[in-house]
Length: 337
Ligand code: NDP
Image (tube, rainbow, N blue to C red; front, side, top):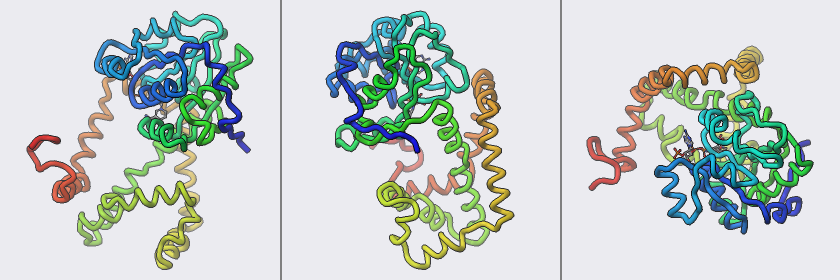
């Protein structure tokens, strides 16, 4: 059973005399910097001179270049996109590392795929919120916190776990539970969830229901456009995936639990598909493909995004959202008028 750590397991005092450098001021960077500062810790931000840097200064943080921040801080939270980090690490962060610094990753990706190889004289740890940046800040402010996966990859100081827990506490995560994991496990679960195919499964359902004569409006409202999904997600979170079933009608419960089962053959085919997803991740094939895609200027992604936005389901969704007043009429920019 995975160990779960809460507030009482973590000592913020370990970070009292340490400068924390938050590298990147985006979704996670901004939320985590605010939370750490509100936890009474010394925080500075490392960013290129642009809008993000200006925002951090407006928010009252000292902002340095990434290299300067990496040189000045004892604990570095690496909160720039995973695909950008290897180059920034090689050019600006790595050369500034001295013994006993701590590198805190928010994703296992670059260590798991060895795209960042830190020197042996630093601690390398993971504090990966299972929460978007907005929720990281809101969870901190509400006092409920949010869960994270944590891990220690390299423990040079002999203090890597207590420091990891202190960072998790500083950002508000030991209120929600810091769950012991590994860089590999975090990467596999995270990527699997993204590769699982949720968006395409909704789209296949749309196509088949259109064939059955259902209107786009009825299908879209059934699947996601009504907001009912948000309530369901809340019920999954608060009550549990199966224990929330009594919130639904008997007919619905029977359908979800009994009718929706796959035959043994279909079940085996689906498991085989899911195993291929895992294998694509663990073999490194996905990471290689993604790196090549970036190097080529995202040709496949751009083509698919353009095609997907032209799919009849999305065209109908735009029409419905306009009619419901969620997005501005065609030709009118958002926020105008
Ligand atoms: P963002 O896309 O929000 O990061 C934006 C930041 O990265 C900005 O400060 C930006 O500054 C900086 N950045 C972008 N390009 C460069 C560059 N070439 N050189 C230097 N800085 C750059 O990232 P997230 O917050 O979404 O993700 C950060 C980490 O957190 C990742 O490891 C991610 O996997 C992890 N994570 C994210 C979650 C989420 O919900 N978003 C959830 C859990 C973990 P500028 O462009 O000004 O340089």
